[in-house]
Image (cartoon, rainbow, N blue to C red):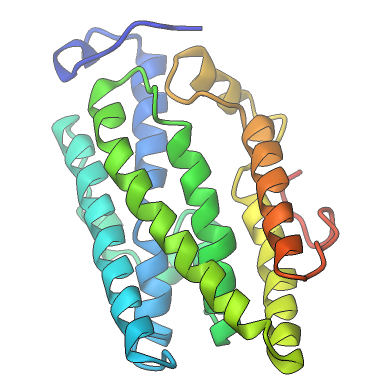
Length: 237
């Protein structure tokens, strides 16, 4: 595994494979940071059940957009025009999980609990990134991401206090659970291996998904809900 640490001044000296891999994964991450705000600003900011929830959604949206800005700045320093990413419609997002509307408040909670948690795992894989400008921005972003996850869990926990709410929470988990698992990509991805080879990410798709599944399954059970079939509705195994 590649263990050198690369500054911006070193990037142009790196092999083309490294350059292309880093830019590719940063484009995906930069795009994904706008996926959440696209969904809940359109659907739930004004419909959230309490003022506190509205404030938390607005704060989350601000922080996610700021995460986008931080990753975009790194790409721009590498000569990538990020304006097309900012202008993309929801249906054009790279990851499929961001293309579908959140139809219930329970789905808003499941999004935070499951989908934002995927974001946490992807960010954790960047903590020791060989490209130092990426590694430097990760700690603060991770800290904020954990708060977004906590809000989603709280929404689901509150819903689970009544039979009706618990049924809504279970339906939302059933719907978003396979999307979360699919967000890690194919387990046999050769590109995933190359990210690890070059020290860009610390885990393969399969390793990261396995760690995510262990964590999220325990959370689902702690809510008194059933863990869905991990193979049902999947597109990337």
